[in-house]
Image (tube, rainbow, N blue to C red; front, side, top):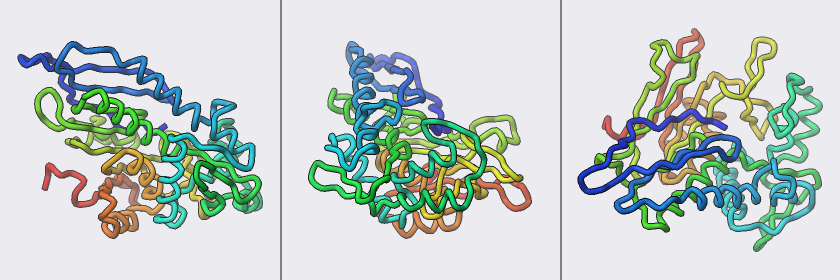
Length: 332
């Protein structure tokens, strides 16, 4: 989906203490995954277990699997949630309320309308009337969680968890590694990362943040290095999935309050948080808020443990960046 972050400076040597860096990688959820962890004994392959976790989550929330729980909900009035869907929907509703609807999983009809859904199309900007009509079934208030049930209050309401599911998956994989006694790892699912403990060198995991090509004036893809320990990171940008019309670039991030696709001056926003589901959810809201309001939101909601890094284009075309005080802790 986003894929903006890349793992950097990951030691691959075997030390005198028999610590080994084990790497698992593959494709899932329409993107890649890379899992690196430190093994102190004879490594046992966890690849099959990891792939089982992906399949289990896909059966719950993949829009590409016809009989997934999410598709059954979208076709009917309610569904019995599994643990995966319950965790994601509860978190989504929490973020929706705190951001006044800037993040909203009921945005699916708008995503489809703009051509960024499962069935892709490029019909250009929808008409104001089409947006108004679609907005009638958009709103997190149209969902009810009652015990094990997810219930829609209005016919036509549909959900899309893509804005939060990959971060959730990274957290699930991290908890799986911990259940196997692994404390030092880095999980990356399509650019949503969870870091725990230290690398082989006994240092926090190093993650490189790439600027998109249009913002790179030096030829070097990595513009910033983060040292992550027991923390997660996610990125959202407007340079991967978009279309241009009338001199305006419309990106795949949709504002659920207005029905409009993102077309502000933000190139990318990167968020760190205590866990990946939080980072993944709030990067969507923070890119819609914009630089100044986004930085203010992070400051006013310090208890969330968010830090944010913006890359944006000024009115004169210059590429600039701003970030919250704690984003680069090693610089403090």
